[in-house]
Image (tube, rainbow, N blue to C red; front, side, top):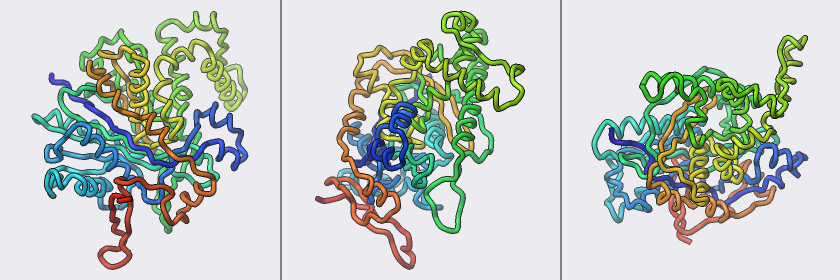
Length: 461
């Protein structure tokens, strides 16, 4: 069958960031707890004129320009976001409106007229859903070209336990046949359960911030991840991708593993329990215990559940600190978390920024990834996980060398705490920094049939 997948990717980061040292000092949190414990170094912060639509438009425009695309040939633009600007009008339509402004002189005022535009929302997994849907759409016809974009602003209440994980950004992906970057296998493991680990309920007063339970959300992430991994393996065996006695540990099948990262070190924290299970499945655990001295507690040794859970947490911490697990993290996970350290959580875009981070780092290190498999673990609160895989194409280096993720992250401006707080609470009236040619929110309608309508324009100076 003709391979279908991701041909190219583009990343947009807001031009402002807050150093986590600044926030740690203000909140009286040890900096090392955030930097070494969670992997947080910098927080991407949107300026007054930036939102999910402007960031999506910037990422899509870069993708179009770099690939010399004719907008009239783009059949769909599907946006994954949980930072929607309207309860009815898709945020993606605002992004396409900006794109039309830029490309109409070259391709005509109706160059996006026949492009299907849609928002998809399921917390942080919405863009993965959009990718799966678009892969099927591309596969159902000839010469179809689609763009999937993830754009989000992770925002929490000031002083909350989620505040230091905030971030913002967008990633756009070109999906087509015979892709140069990744061929995505259309087998998706799924696990879903309706829970309230993180959600944004309707309130009397509009709020951009969620109701969340961090510890419960971590548990939901871990449970859905394990269930989706098992579901992917079952579906792959049924499809004849591999036999039932192979790849009991899917991590053996994958050269790299890409996770949704609410914070940079989240994947390695979440996977350690599964890692132990995999070592046991492969019959290696007894040798591991002998070599590294792991002491796994048994439930019958404890009179109460809390005591056992505390002992298990210490056990998994010992495993995660071991040379054995550190080697696994270095090989499979570490490069994917580097960009996240300098952005914070990007919600729907987090998974795909992790992919770009991994591939750009592997390109810089001249890694030989062509023909190897990458495993994806996507998660969205509420809650759902999806697991899928892709094969790295032989042309991947030609594509990855143009990403420029880390160059973009270096080319930003630091803000102080006072600027951060005024941007967060909406009292900052004028943009902190603007660039010529970048899109920004120009005005919001105040009355009549234009009440709340958003109008965008590119900065002229």
